[in-house]
Image (cartoon, rainbow, N blue to C red; front, side, top):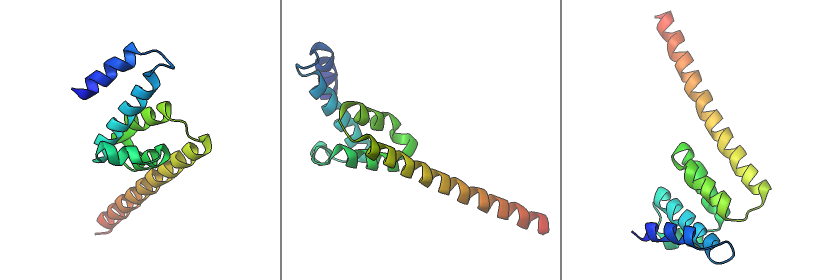
Length: 111
């Protein structure tokens, strides 16, 4: 229910009169829910920290990460670094899975 109220306020208020603040609070609430944090724990973190934690969740948190980026000001270089780190982690995991699958396939062929 509180989320619906915030979302309603974000549509009623105009820019410069509370809309941005409502959107930032909504972004933090959604990030907190995905990360399993209380609102206060998430609110105490810098937006870049929230983004880094959301990046660890990968696909599960794309919408929330996007909302944090849209509603909070952060250096573009920091955002790019987090995205690059996230991509590299996914790539490494994919490579490992591929190598283990290939090794399994080769072992099956040899036996």
